[in-house]
Amino acid sequence: MLGQKSVDIAADLGVSEAMVSYTKNSPVCQKQLEIMHGARDAEFLDVATEIRKMVPNAVKLMAEALVDPDEKLGDRLKVAFEVLERESPKIRKFEGAVGYYTADDIERLKARGRQQAIESGVMVLDS
Image (cartoon, rainbow, N blue to C red; front, side):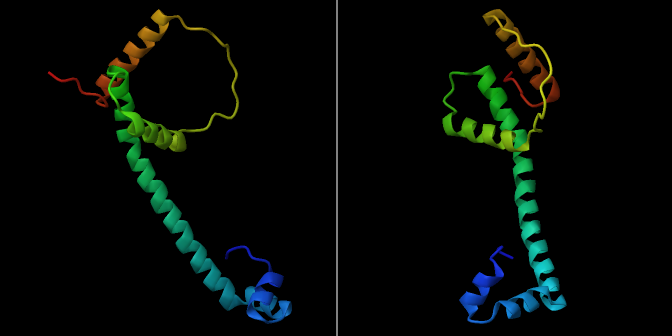
């Protein structure tokens, strides 16, 4: 299951490489390996599910940083970015134009992002 070579397993156990090969290929061993792989895969899925549950909080924290960039979010913001990085779809190919934004353009984009966050319920303003 760990990917160790038959010759290395044989040396570790003090048996012949042929015996290791017969054992690894036996139906009983194959069934046990299948069970062990299934358990390992289930653990990975549990971790992936927990990370996916963090995404809304990560988005909310990043939205807060847009509203109040002077707030000291430090490590929390870094973790939020890492969660989103893991869960965001990967772009395989870029086709399009490259442009430059002025300070006014950036402010308009930030305002639009804040408005969309408010409308979607991700960000709530204090009354």
